[in-house]
Amino acid sequence: VKDTLDSHGFGLSSVRFICGTQDIHKKLESLIAEFHGTEDAILYPSCFDANAAIFEAILSPEDAIITDALNHASIIDGIRLCKAQKFIYKHMDIEDIRSKLEDAKQSGSRFRWIVTDGAFSMDGDIAPLDEIKKLADEYDAQIFVDECHATGFIGPRGRG
Image 1 (cartoon, helix red, strand yellow):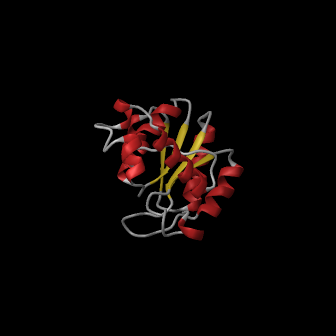
Image 2 (spheres, helix red, strand yellow):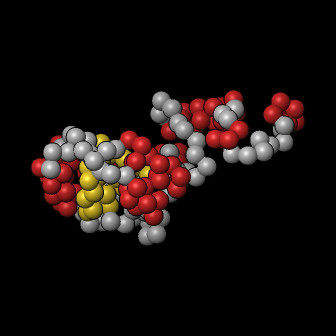
């Protein structure tokens, strides 16, 4: 702790986007990526902020989001902000996901994202990711999984 206080001081005085990225941010992101077995990670002040930003930044009106009806409020807000086509499927209903993917495909969507929580925070349901993956492969779709409520307690070593 003393070494960090000596090298970085007591605090940054503000948030990262004002004070800039520090080496300790990059180190923590590297540790998070290693923990999850991913190439990289980006730290956000909260997952709510991340979900509010990602859809609008990446998707356009030519794209489609196929989203669970009971996704977290942050996902719902993020999807509302973007201009992609929106298809809401019944909670964890694989056949309804298939139907919405077919609708999205028929609409001529460029990219199709199936969006789900990994663990649903309000009722504890666990998304059927194996089945969702099969549909994603069949319909050339990507999967977006919010693992906030799964990290630390679901999966091998708490990796979601």
